[in-house]
Image (tube, rainbow over all chains, first blue to last red; front, side, top):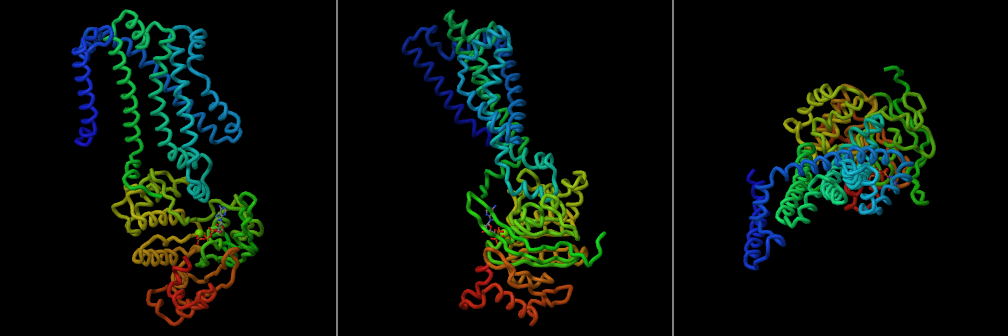
Amino acid sequence: MTATLQRWMWPILLLAMFLIVWEVAVILTDTPTWMLPRPTDIFAAFREDHALLWWHTQVTLTEVVIGFGVALVSGVAIGIAIDSSPVLERSLYPLIIASQTIPMVVLAPLLLIWFGYGLTPKIIVAALIAFFPITVSTVDGLRAADREVMAMLRSFGASGWNRFRLAKLPAALPSIFSGARIGVAVCVIAAVFGELVGASEGLGYLMQRSASQFLTARVFAAIFILSFMGVGLFALISLLERILLPWRKYLSDRPRA
Amino acid sequence: MRNPSDIPRVRLDRIDAIYIEDDVTLEALRDISFSVEDGEFVALVGPSGSGKSTLLDIIAGLYAPAGGDVILDGETLPTPARLGASSYMHQRDLLLPWRSALDNAALALEVHGVPRKQARQRALERFDEFGLAGFEDAYPAQLSGGMRQRVAFLRTVLAERPLLLLDEPFGALDALSRVVLQSWLLDLWERERQAVLLVTHDVDEAVSMADRVVVLSARPGQITHIETIDLPRPRTRDMLTSETFHRHRVALLRALGLLDQPQEALIASEVALA
Ligand SMILES: Nc1ncnc2c1ncn2[C@@H]1O[C@H](COP(=O)(O)OP(=O)(O)OP(=O)(O)O)[C@@H](O)[C@H]1O
Ligand SMILES: [Mg+2]
């Protein structure tokens, strides 16, 4: 517990110092609030608008969680399919990698035309963005399975399913978790981007509306919530990894060949 | 067992093995023929790269020989069909880092369809014997090299196949655990009398444990000599100093080409073999 405290102490101190410098700098330079609000203005916005902020946070969070869930399930499933089928590896995998060159800027307006202003296009954008790192890390993780371990299991007479269940998948999990962590972080950005393209709710929409009304403190409040959401989801997955893969911590203590 | 004891557990008939990699052909084994009878303990010695591990891979069904037949219990089995017929302990311990020592030891049983709980129970019963008591829940990364090897050894033994293929099972052990596990293996073998094929770098280990010792030449591995060991069973530590032991030892060192060399090389025979 004290170790956790120590780990967090320095970033928190740094952040506090940054906020103080910001506050003082704005006061000294006499910058107007609509241009750059002071941290205390932003806290005030949190207090006054908390119902509004909370409502839009829920919308964005829903998009992120559903989008990420879809990306996780389909990414892992397709990663497994690609690993187990040489035909898919040669046909589908290059296409998935090539699809990354299609910019979201182009795709998002199209999704808006096809699916309207609701949650669906945002969920699709979030899922598409997170799908890629999750799929690639699943394929990489499955490929990294020790060939000799697989041979040992075959010498025991293990079926393909048993080899997958007992060795391949567990060996791939750390890599899948890395992909999921990257995926969830980009998911938040993608959902907000989807909202900026066209929406009637969500933090991206709120930011856009508040900016046009020069409610800059509220824009900053939304930005803080978004970064907190990204960091929080990232930390949640790291925590899940530590709980589900307790053996990992021993490996980092003592590197082995 | 279903086969009469005059049929060997495994018979190798003119086995050749090659590795092909990027148009480079490497001949690993040439014309290997010998058998391990039911209840017989055979050791296989040879310099590094002579194809000992390759031969075990072939018997286990993991690698297809370029020529020749593997006959298990009188039946010529093609390559994938031999999988699961023997208990094979690889040269590396191959423990799964996400499984505890106990779960690693129970792995082969689980593969054979024993329910997890029961498999763990059976592994647990032997943890003490293997000097692993108290480390049931430790992950492989928390174990010493010697302990990891013992877990791997236990995993192999628990598979309980009538043919035991051991690739330097005591290689990573300190001298003391080595002696303990050697006599433990001999005890087990006295009780169960499986057919054993033991690969080792250690001539003394081969003589003290085996009924026969097969000597391979440097690559491509060919059989240069088969020594039948004349020591009574059960073997004891005292036999290590006997006249017979010494005679076999010298014969094997000569077969390995280690006696024509200068004195230093002879003293370092184990090192040279390794
Ligand atoms: N998968 C492989 N691909 C190509 N060559 C291989 C492969 N496995 C082994 N070899 C080669 O075949 C030869 C025999 O290897 P093998 O591992 O059977 O020797 P070994 O007698 O077990 O040696 P050691 O005592 O060092 O374990 C070696 O020259 C090795 O380089
Ligand atoms: Mg070897």
